[in-house]
Image 1: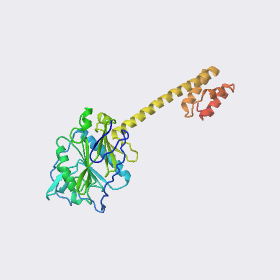
Image 2: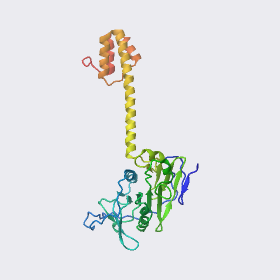
Image 3: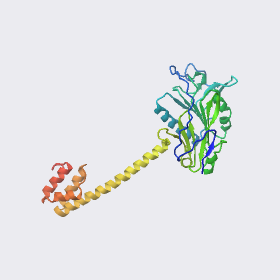
Image 4: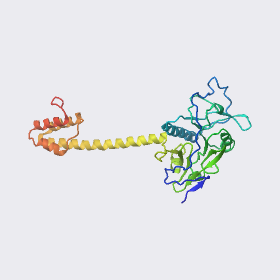
Length: 342
């Protein structure tokens, strides 16, 4: 089945976990003066904190999506070696088109400069516009996310804007069209000549996924049905431009680590079982040839030493020397032990 295309630019997904690079590049970012810190509300340059204009969501999936995006984008941007700042639920003060002072609280704001302060920021204190704002919609905020906030962010010169639908439902059919947004579960816009133009998204029904590309952040964005059903973060993933693979969440890292540790434990158990068989075989051969005392002494050597256990041919070669003492001397040499140690 052919992928459904949305927006004015489209891409085809080659496999469920990858999105091809978008051929169109973002407009160059403005140069940034990092010589002065940006005032925030807890610095002398900043006025008293204004009342909040948004209610922050505490819905678990909403919060988990933002936490994943914060970690994934921080990793990606830090690797590029350029200054950046990412803030969640931070107040943003600005003047609207009518010259009125306003405040909004973006779910996530990505800036091409560091922000070491705490609390609200003023747009006029910033050395350049933020790169990107990401909102995770909810029934109470979606109208503002698609309406007045979109207008505000364009007016502030924010280069890219994304609204994500958490699709807070376990019904697989809901992911196909989303629950809150009119054009699928993810919608994005890029600023062009002062206006937001739609970024293309793709629904790949065969892969049961949605995908898009962010020219400003230079990475793919993926929403996969399988992850949506099994992960509390809603299944959104940032695609690593270097590998084409999704950057894993903290839970996925923990699950992967646990799986690797479980595999190592299983391998160790098999190794221990094999070593026990080898040790038992060696002791049995010694017992047949020289009796219980020599077999017990050989078993003690195997327990005390970290050297490799002797295979049957080696034990037989030791036995060919004829005497129990010669057998034990060769065993001590193999295990790196002296007569006083066994």
